[in-house]
Amino acid sequence: MDRSQLADFLRTRREALQPEDVGLPRGPRRRTRGLRREEVAALSGMSTDYYSRLEQGRGPQPSEPMLAAIARGMRLSLDERDHLFRTAGHNTPGRAQRADHIAPGMMRILDRLQDTPAQVINLLGETLTQTRLAVALLGDETGFTGLDRSMVHRWFTDPRARRIYPEEDHAMHGRFLASDLRAAYSRRGADSRAGEIVDALLARGGEFAALWKAHEISVRPRNDSKRIAHPDLGLLELHCQVLYDRDQDQALLVYTATPGTDSHDKLQLLSVVGDRQPVS
Image (cartoon, rainbow, N blue to C red; front, top):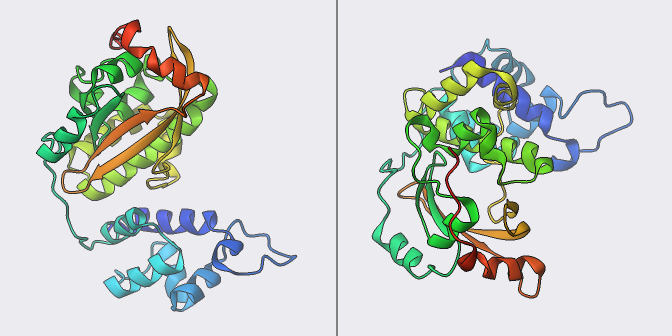
């Protein structure tokens, strides 16, 4: 049980939750950012004193039923719930960690997408394979070594990794990537490769350290839109469809554009503009 991290996580989640999110009136005299401790305690079916001691790092190790009640009361996502359990010293159902092996079924799907930008990434944001058009769109992301295999690590250590996105989108992507790493860290633990990446980035301080302190877990939209700044084609507004393989902790990303749009026309030109070179 990591008392300080548990307390910090509960506090940040409570402060991020608004009364309207849980059906409570805001009232004219509310000064507290987010919910009050007594409100979280009532939503979770426990005493205010018990919850307050947890948030202050003074309480006993909460039981699994108590953690489940807190997760329900605070409207935690599944990833946030798992993080809560692990931080409190309890196990959650594990998942396979064969991070680099792509399942045959996933590869068969990718084989049928050779005329589309698509790639498979693992839990740490490491690109395992790409279609030719994905290389043309994004550059070759499979040739990196060490911690730089992770897009999360590259994002916070090498400014060149950000060139693929418009500058005004950088803050959003940084938040998404940090929250993805938080989810991986929660599931794999401090002694894992995720923990190694976290330690390296925290040692640098700055933007990542501030985002890490926010305790956000997997805030990225499941099917989000992306704006890609291509050096030859200009700005493309694309949809990123995601197919998850939960057993392998991998995701297939497929980039498409709305037919009839300028971005759709540009996407058709990828096959003739040639492959982008990897950032080096």
